[in-house]
Image 1 (tube, rainbow, N blue to C red):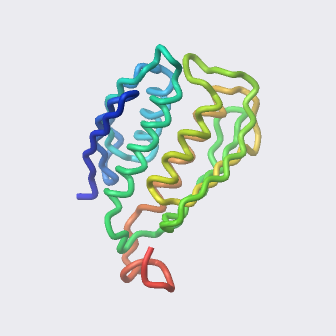
Image 2: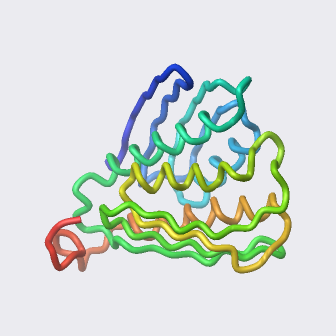
Length: 194
């Protein structure tokens, strides 16, 4: 089973997470930020990941620590669940439509973290989710999962749709990249390691 179970506690947040790369999309999420819960539930459902997550953060300050630290723990869980990465496809991509919005996500589980995030939001918040935190979340995931991640807005103007398309496209790209491929002997790298 490609799974991970993690707890991370700081003076700002306390996060518990269970993650299964080979799930069915079953999820239970509670972060105290309704829209963020909605995004993480969509991520799990559209990537066919099982996710159980509780996050308690200093929301009286703002949403930054809760969202960023959740990204850190999710990234760590992805890395742990991938294990030695033997037999995975390594690369995954998705161009995902949502009404007027079109979002591209491409991922490489290379072991070299990088984020290219090109989304243009026109509001500061969607619900209680600060839109600028989307980049911080995906950066935390990419660095801690050690993945190369590109997320790009191709069309769209509704901020809810833009965010949701990004999370769903990421889910689809990660599902594809993490999938087992019987033709891959060892890892998909000329160097022999990822």
